[in-house]
Image (tube, rainbow, N blue to C red; front, side, top):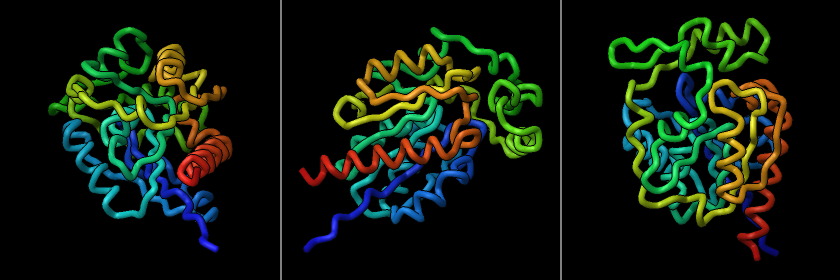
Length: 234
């Protein structure tokens, strides 16, 4: 009797972060028997970030469930067309369509955090008071850690995405809406989830539910992983 392989789970981070932002959810998924890896990319250009995510796919087995947070939703939208990818999970994420950029989407649904940003040395740095709008439901010590370890993207990163192939149009997808998000507007999240026909849940969370409500995020990813394996086996 053949034993069905569990989906590999590959995480894609957003701006002001790196792969360690998924540190509260990765161990439980590993314990479930999933191969798990978080892509690490430099936020220097969208093309380079997508290329780094594709290189990460080369380091693991398939089938793959891609999980993108925030800007990571754009990178999985581009990289997810790879034939090894069987599903996409978006966490408070953007998800451009053909001809759209992340900036196009954010401009239609403005939020507070971007008034707490300083452009310096060609990068977009979050000011200390910005963390309240990024991760406001975390304990104070965790908020301080988020700010101390945040990584600034190149200033025009959100204007670079011009996609000609959209993975969420052809792959099953899931979406976690963060209802108290002041970084990616909850109404933008709902619009994107509806547009892609995603299986959706809404959480009373800031922009970082994988840090503030990791158990719920773990359970949601588990359900997505089980669903794509059922589809793969069908």
